[in-house]
Amino acid sequence: MGKKHETPLLDELKKGKWISFVREMERAAEKSERTEDLLGQVEESYRDKITHWKHGGMAGVRGYGAGMVGRFSEFPEKYPGVKECHSIRLNQTSGFFYNSDVLRKLADIADQHAGGLFNFHGSTGDIQILGLTQADAEDLFQKSAELGFDLGGSGSDLRTPSCCVGPARCEFANYDTLQICYDLTHAFQDELHRPSFNYKFKMKFSGCANDCVAAASRSDLAFIGTWQDNIKINQGEVKNYVKKFNVQKYVLDKCPTKCMWFEGENLVIDDSNCVKCMHCINEMPKALKSGDQKGLSILIGAKAPLVTGPRMGMMLIPFYDVHEDSKNDYEWLKGLISNMWEFWDEYGVSRERIGELIARVGLVTFLEGIGLEPTIDMVREPRSNPFIKFEDEEAGAE
Ligand code: HEM
Ligand code: SF4
Ligand code: SF4
Image (cartoon, rainbow, N blue to C red; front, side, top):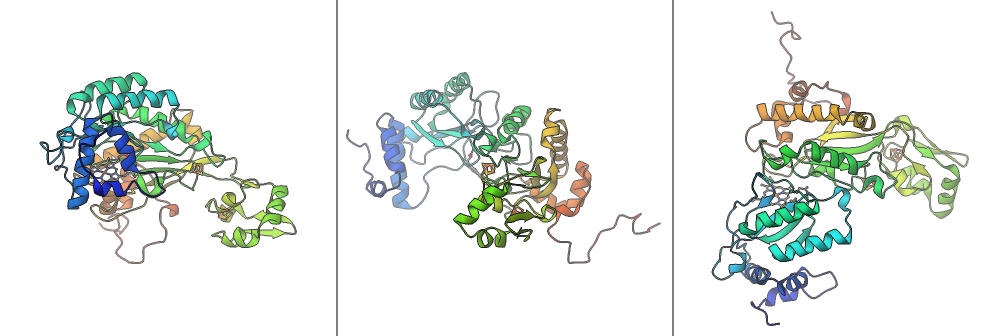
């Protein structure tokens, strides 16, 4: 089949071992004029070294304020197929587990109503279907809904929550990441579909400190599995590892708190000094397992650079008994999240992430606002400057 647009620069990217996105786009273009034009416009961007999408753009479906990203071509006459080239976010399944039947049906929908192209997945987690016009949006949305997929988030709302594969496939999981991700997504559907915040708000769930969804750096509220009691040691398996590699050098000497040692042939861990970093468990998964008192830590405030610099999440709740609270449908957690949103709504300024708000008003003010006491776990070190604010009565004022 003849190509509609010559793409000499993109053709270079069909060489080499890695899967070529150009080849994938060409396959989609065989069935879609839109994607043919998309290839043309992308080639032009490669030549000019500049984007050819217009600024911003609005698109959406009825009843929802979020879920689609509108995009318009700078050259609608030259590339009519991408005059409108919106993308739609579909809320992925927890942990990205699908069956092929559902994926085939989604592919049919994308072929029929869009450019046949997906992003599996967006960095937040959503399935993204690329290359829609506003006229397609409603049909595509209804057909996806029949398959069981609702829209994901966008704009100043609760974005699509996402989780690691957790207990479905991983023996390190300290809680059911898939279940809580699903439950909270359902609990906060309104906040997800109809933006009412100062800015975006993301939640991510990792089953342990390995943090396979990078919750600590990519979500305003990060949930990271941990345990409170002792690491379980299978001494027989430890001995097997000792035969295989230098356990002293690669495990004990690398423990960040140096809380492990051998007594004779037996491995000993001083759990009171273990910071649950996961290193020893990662190295010797058959010998070591996390304790029985499992739960998670909650970190707050991670964000990308804009406006006041990048942040990773800081410790808010060292140990949250997720298993206990789940019996109550996460009533305590939902209350805490609502308190945060209320405080952010009251004191945050437009386009201020919650991490920036906390930095501006101070952690103590934030904690008071949401009803938590400050604890030593919340700081890496105490302040080094003496500019301490006292409440009037504490300072002894009349
Ligand atoms: C017109 C403007 C923007 C567009 C079209 C856009 C588009 C996107 C898209 C398509 C994703 C993936 C979403 C998903 O996976 O569901 C994304 C994620 C993201 N966006 Fe934007 N974005 C815009 C503005 C911004 C701005 C201004 C910031 C920062 C202040 C930002 C920060 C991020 C971050 C950090 C992620 C990744 C989140 C994660 O890793 O989970 N974006 N954006
Ligand atoms: S974060 Fe931990 S529990 Fe989740 S998949 Fe990674 S290693 Fe497993
Ligand atoms: S989890 Fe980390 S801190 Fe704890 S004993 Fe293992 S290596 Fe040391």
